[in-house]
Image 1 (cartoon, chains in turn brown, green):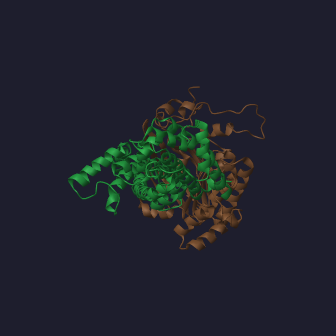
Image 2: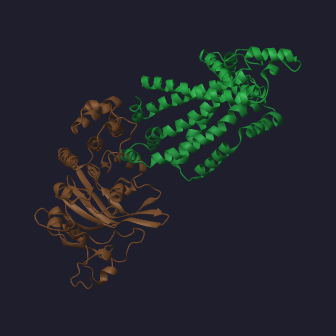
Image 3: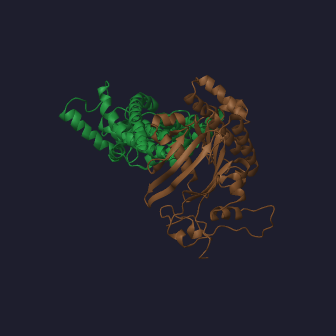
Length: 328
Length: 308
């Protein structure tokens, strides 16, 4: 997909594996996508599809051992992050790329005040002293709707929604160009989810941050994202603009995801789940990884891995799109 | 917080009553005649009978125990049968030697144990980790008295560079402190390692790395402080135990502390001394524990809010 302005992030053929006792877990296999400046991309898939691993890969935070980035390129502002020395990479984390983790209950350090934790990232990346950093941390707290005077409180003194606000304040403290939000609302209850999403959306616009939003909630994607990539078993199976994917989904997996959502417009008695389970990542099926669960498969799906097909300028799908469905 | 401390100190009372009852009962039923010990081998039967009557040794168990408790509450544990000194005077004259040795031993074990545990955890399964954990296991498993004897053999008998026992300048501290330090260091190192390993996998450590925090600060600022609670517990237990007199080590090195005093008093059936010592050791142990609990609240703010 072409960007109107500049391309901020471009990932080519990224592969990440974990070595475990049971064998090699192929968590991410040949993932490619790009993100334009100021845009938001949704990364959607089931638990275990490799979404978080992809995100950690961008930050080079894959725990090694057991994990390793085994191939690919990650261009950020035109520079390959995988070739940066560790020290340079550390300076990018938290300042140019920052991440919001899934569970706000566990992602804050319980023995440091929230003010200290926000001030720490400012102190590392901006030429500010302790005092000025804390002042800025208080401003960040106010920006996310928490009184600055609470900077000396500890995480356990906040509710879940407020903790996630603190995490967001921390992630945005140094005006990152790219924000990776890994299921930022999954651990929160529904009323708080909407608040947090609204706030993230608003802050993103104010600060002109690009964002990768990892989620399995297609409703959230529709609300926030410009483009969306559907992940399955470590691969992107469908990728395109939000209009294309939502109005004209092509991959049987994407179609299955939409069919398993309740709709207000259509009166359905039963939702249609996608039958079967995600394949074991240590032992992926031959051919298309989705073929054992696919209702549209044909013979070649079992033996050949389908290539990424360009359907239009802003719609790609990794599927043979079989005309003659031989089985099922 | 103060309320909590007062509550904890009040709880000391039932503990002390229980401890005193147990030690009194044991001493009451152990064989041996205090009158004989005080008057010596050549005392006449009449003198012995008079002294027994005078000391109330012919009274029933409960009369004797109540008398002991009434006196003890007033701080009077009697006089040593051996030296005829007031029990607590004797204990307090011996305690500094024990305190010094315990302090140095614990300091040594903390200075070795914590850094070794931290490095082992951050480099899990490395050569350093494997080697130090084997040594830690040896340190924990080696009996103190045996290690003490080996050290004496090596440094005092063969090399002749350090005194084999007794109390004096700093050279007298080296061998007993090493003996006490190695076993404590072993358990502290192992506890630090396992506690760090648990903490280092937590989400907030990943958050710290995602913020661009230096790895050194990730380990020492973010992880270690969270890993401290179990480490403090072990250090506190070791210190409390050593303050009660490291009985074996003090005996091997003829250290004039309360551990050796306890052994000597038991051997001589010096009942008031034993009772005084056991109660004293129980009190120090409880106070060390209380200090550790208070320390928790400084390390972990979540615990502070529970102390009410």
